[in-house]
Length: 150
Image (cartoon, rainbow, N blue to C red; front, side, top):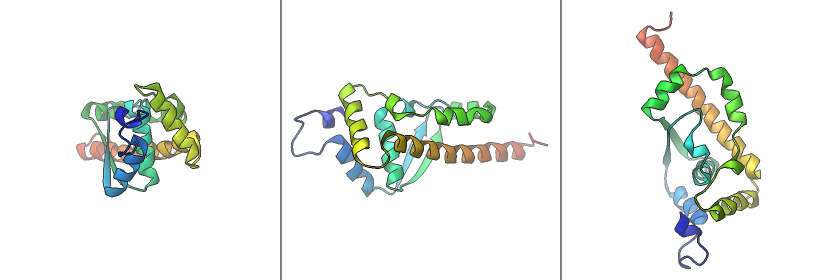
């Protein structure tokens, strides 16, 4: 990604933002691997937020997979606080290793006319809310199956 963002990178190759969008159009389904549902690393990194946002805007089929320890923590989490977590999502706080990447992606998002940073935030919130619903259903079905709920 950093190579794509460098000024003067191979003039024959597109920049990372353009190349990612072009490549994403060619695939049918994407998988997001999430380390923690409540405070995932991908929300702290601008490239991954951009990737999720772009995929959702292209209406790509997707799966979100929680790492096993994240699923265990999710089973114990009080989901009444999830609304607060979702409200705090802010792409402008996501970082990149190279500050210029962060600035370029934020500019790109503003120029696309899809609601800018707040449009990104809302898209990611909707994705996580949908996945939260699915996760809760999976957790409770598993508990019922095990006889944990009576």
